[in-house]
Image 1 (cartoon, one colour):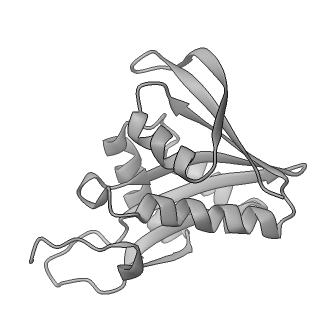
Image 2 (image 1 turned 60 degrees about the horizontal axis):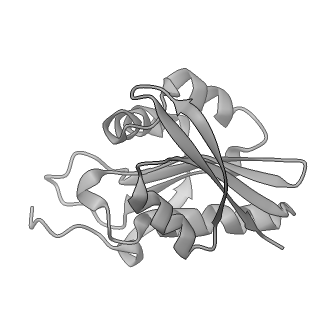
Image 3 (image 1 turned 180 degrees about the vertical axis):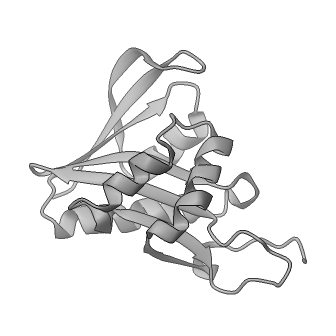
Length: 163
């Protein structure tokens, strides 16, 4: 393998399927997100927000690459609000615009569903993620004390007006 990792124009963003869940859970575990686990993702795929569950895959894989999913995003739309639950990109693929591409696609889908506002929570110490969200137009609107466990940490609540 050459060591060159894909940029956003070298990945395709497609709907998540049940076949993706083992890799999604692996990425979740390695990225330190709050644990959903296989069963929660599977249950979410059975609901009406399936189109808001996306994965990023390299357009072309070398024979030596075992993983095919480099990132994912999961969101839910209810009553005109888009809530972004989880966004994660494998560490070796970060800082290449893949997270931003996933976020853009899910925001587009939220608009298509007539969502007016998008919300998310992010760990207060995750400054890289906060910067990504701010570049996408999100603003910090609140703080939730001790929202996360393992480790215990505050959440910054961010929102974006969509339309």
